Image (cartoon, rainbow, N blue to C red; front, side, top):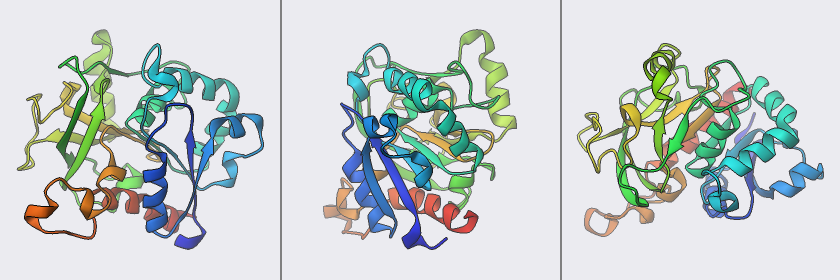
Length: 272
């Protein structure tokens, strides 16, 4: 598939606030990108099957009442669960960024150990600091190749991206914590961990690990490798002028967010 033919759907609901930045980034990369209100998808006036990728953006969907992403996730599963399953089964990519990651976990799409789970198998809980964390962090790329959407990143690459969340602490239930961690690692579903600027694991140290995530987990994929969730925001470090130190270090055309989003499009180009 040619880059100019790729169609990206960016769903939104009340409280979504990163949809336009995400749309602009994909358009800059040469793809077609539409921001679509969830009501149109639920009512059937727009079908997700028309698109080649689904990108759930950041924000505070439905005010993040109950838990972050919970209401949007349950709404999706109840209204378009079958369509979502077909989308994944066809190998099409789904990405959740920050609030979108929370939605994918709450919906059962991630980690998806046994497919589209009927209940959440992990959670993104309140930050250890008990406050909203808005800061730049470093990520280390950990995947060995199972994540289809990041294969164009270099092994061990260290990326710099911003986080902005109050509930980003990735956790498993304590009773099965080690069992699920082993499954995540054995399936090669670990994609990104929080790291220090030199690329070494953060080992839970604040602020390098900004939220206290278990094992420094910052991004995971499903076993099939076409559903990806990340807490940091690639769309907020897409352009060089979005970087916090561009004035002192010189203006570059793009930031590290471009590497991740372009990798997703490269997968679609080769696959379809």
